[in-house]
Image 1 (spheres, helix red, strand yellow):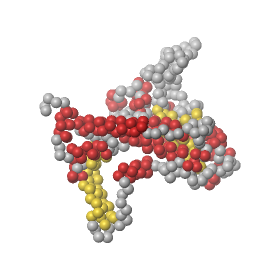
Image 2 (cartoon, rainbow, N blue to C red):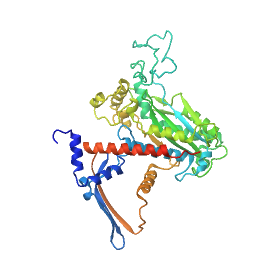
Image 3 (spheres, rainbow, N blue to C red):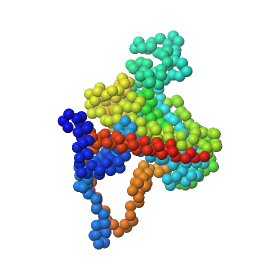
Image 4 (cartoon, helix red, strand yellow):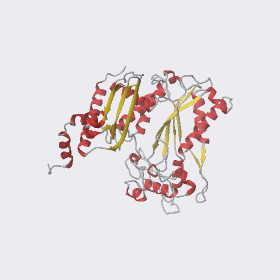
Length: 457
């Protein structure tokens, strides 16, 4: 035993435990979660009238006297099984707001709907991916900047080229503006949605305060890091009646009107940063690149994008981490040494250092830039949606739990007492190997079932 690797020793130890079958059941129940949460406690359900115990569960009978539950991390780089599950939930959440289902009527497919992409402005030229033998920044007689760096690049960069996304001249790049734009991106989105409603109301000849009486703007958006480490936003935007998806929009609420309102709002929305003696006051806006395309209602309609394709596109980007685009880290950074130790690009590391430097200014303290240095100052959620857009993650998880274990028995007179405590997370080396195997088996079975499923015609 002493000559075996630590993983093998731990597997043998676990297999010799009388409760090993129950451990496998727990790991399987979590889908092979890579970093499960360990809970200890109990739950007891009694008849409220007689005090009779109807159901009792205690972790003292479990392996290690603890229960394993999913970590529910959305990042594929942290936990692939939970990330895959989160992507599936996101797909159904977004799709329900596009095609109906999950308490949302199917009539919403006939509503004005757009798939919009809003980008960050330019903070300086960066190397870009090229195709068809194009060159990066071909500029004749461009010369050099004040720091001596060339203002042109005649190279052809592949997608995997490490130069892609890096500034032509880091000294000229507006790192301060980049970080502050990230810190205000959520507020800028709020200004954008308000401006969209305002433009729709003005076009219809309504006072702005009367817009909620006639229509409602619903959306779901996902933030994605570009190779230049700047966030841009993909959003599904839908126009409903005043009661949300259950009422149609007014006659003036057309797809063309919504498209015009979105384009106008994206150009006009602006946020001002807090005044700083060191930086002044900056005005932040969306970038010049804007894409707003209608979504088609039926398969036969060739105009616009397909519903399912958009839902899958959004779900894919929800599970991406900042490290997937070399644009940050998946964990918070406590010190400057943590930043320097990261395997990040010089561009991303400079953005983190800028967050750390700006975070020391008293006037910028509410932005908590040091706490969000790992996301380059971006403080928003990766996915957000309006209340009336579709269902919720909680509803989807509850529905899945009912499907897996069956609905809980009706017990209107029951009184449940529960007490749980967090006692740790993760796996031992041997359990990590077992979880990886279970996750691989689940993925393989899912792929086989998908391949053998009949094709809809």
